[in-house]
Image (tube, rainbow, N blue to C red; front, top):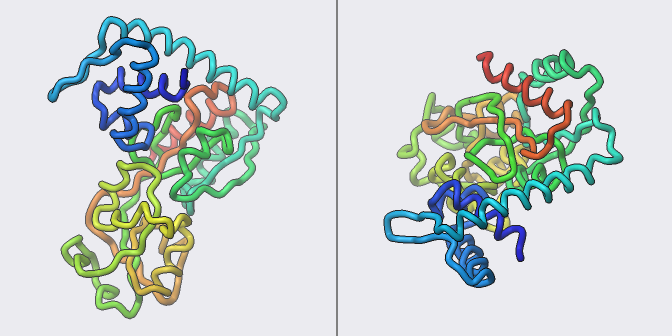
Length: 288
């Protein structure tokens, strides 16, 4: 039996909606549904009743989900124990997307060390496509990521919200605007940038086209240079103008959903150092 299919079934039992459940595993509903159907065929029973309006658990489904939760808890605790058995409990690999928490990083480390003075961080760069999977797969212990919504296996602590900007070539007529709307840029070509989660398409708006292209940019730091080189425009967060200045582009405030930055950790990671990071982030998120 496929452990992944059991995870999908548990998520579906929580959401009772194929689209939302699939999004938590950042796959599309069609392959998600095929995994559920395959699991039902293997077990020889229906786990979910589907109608055009709702999804419900069958009695067999309720029994399986209870057993699956117990099994997955055991698998996850064994995996977590294996990865940290020989590791320094106070050394955390920090994965950072772009500029991370920008100017708020010193505040977070100060809050962490007030609880766990011995915690130290090693650094790993995250990219736009792997920012969640790097945490889930144990490549990093903590991720500073763009929040898009729930992701199975991860806990998110909101840390920072900042406006989005559109990065435009300095020679563009858009460069002198005080603020831009989607209507203002409707005729402009967008630079394809990777998205880690389907929900980020709502944040990206018109920039979402091409996000799944193999050549989509994966590193936030590369966006200004790519805009200058190609003449295309791209989305970024407001702090990009300070962290990635480039003489041939401008960072113009852009209407729409803000950028939400969060600290991501694995649901199963119960180390004291991780608890300190979560608590410190909640403190940081409460100070605006």
